[in-house]
Amino acid sequence: MHPSAAATSAATEDAREEAIRVTDLHKSFGSVEVLKGVSLTANKGDVVAIIGGSGSGKSTMLRCINFLETPSSGQIVIGGEEIAMRADGTAANRRQIERIRTRLAMVFQQFNLWTHRTLLENIIEVPVHVLKTPRAEAVTRARELLARVGMAEKEDAFPAFLSGGQQQRAAIARALAVDPSAMLFDEPTSALDPELVGEVLTVIRDLAAEGRTMLLVTHEMKFAREVANHVVYLFKGRIEEQGPPAEVFENPKSERLKQFLSSVS
Amino acid sequence: MLGLGESAQLLSLSSPGWGANLLRGLANSLQIAFGAFGLGLLIGLLGAYGKLYGGKVTRDLLAIYTTVIRAVPELVLILILYYVGTDVINRIAAMMGYGRVEISGVVAGIWVLGIVQGAYSTEILRGAIQSVPPGQLEAARSFGMPPLMVMRRVTIPAMMSFAVPGLANLWLIATKDTALLAVVGFNELTLETKQAASSTRAYFTFFLAAGGLYLMVTLCSGVVFGWVEKWARRGQPSLKGAR
Image (tube, rainbow over all chains, first blue to last red; front, side, top):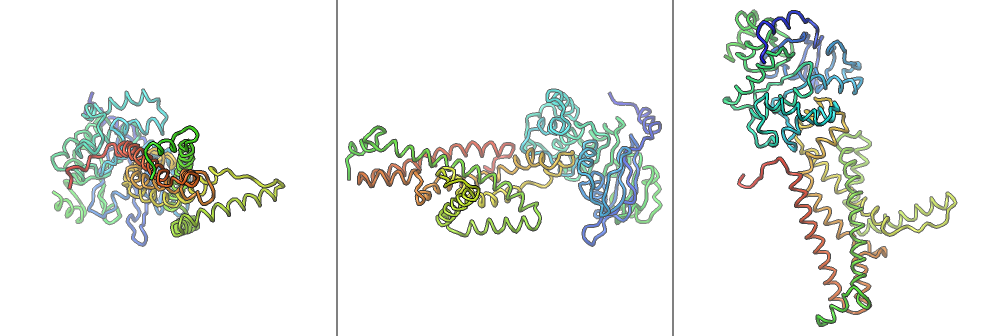
């Protein structure tokens, strides 16, 4: 079931196919410039951890990739397809954005499961209504995914009756249901009680071992170091330092990263 | 005061009783209330979206609509909308070379009350839409749902629990506002009652009966809205015990 570590590294080394490329991304909210020219490439099978202090722009960067935030300028290429942008950064083609969004799946800090639907309904919602998968097929797949995240018993439960960890695992199942080419995790464990963090990280660790392409904004440094093959440290809207986790964590070059690492560990 | 036997005779469904007239009036009232409430919901949904997401002109126009409608007494609005409405339609008909158009009381009533209801539902639905946690909509957008699908699959179901209590109020107001249409000569329950009462001089009997009918409508509505609210609140923990 779980691919060996060798298989994983083979996937990352052989298939250097580009999944996500961000070039010179800028984003301002009013007069405040949150991103000041960020560039990043993730190849297929990469797990990129994005770390940084609060206000460093890491969540904004992630949200610009699927245009939940409209970038001010820059270039975003998903699976070789460039997102058409007008001069002011707004999306030129809504349908293109919608199509690209179905290939990316986002997992939110606050889970954002649809509270008026059961877990099963949450998971089949996008496959059935957006991707037009036949309902029976979507339900079968949803049950497999719920079982996979350890929530098979809860398919008829409503989100509000579950713990944060259970909701987040269901949200990950919802993201997997669209069979995404890349997954975007926006601080997936930050809203969880400490004793619930582990169960969510276990699920994400599994996905990483499977060779899924993931961008992961996180405060869990130990976890980032363990699952990521590339770590990006953002400071005030710029990439201050990046590299393999061993280098970034063991041997940080920038003073700010050193300070940041000592403040969070 | 009349005895019970006499009252029963007056209210009986067959001639010489006036019961059938009262029930016909009730049916007319309900027909208008349904139509007006439905039209009001449609106007309200468009109005709420217009106010929340529309451009400046749309928002200004909607602000004028909701302000004016909610400022002017309903009786006055009904007189204005009814007479102005029929006049405008007749002028258009004359211009196009048709003769006088007879406007059905039910259709006119539905339009007039629907426009009034629309102003109130605009505000109820706007508040309800704003109460939906933004993350719910963001999640829908992040999976590539187009705007109309987000509205149909997420916003509307998620806002229902916030909207239902206000909409239940609005429905009850609609059932009672139909009585105001008596002033334009529409045979709804109140006018039928008045006619029955003045023909027989049994005012007390007939108005008490009409009151009973309005009360029954309210009680039945309460049951139905109870179900609707239960459905709309599915997935939300009960507030009992929470303080």
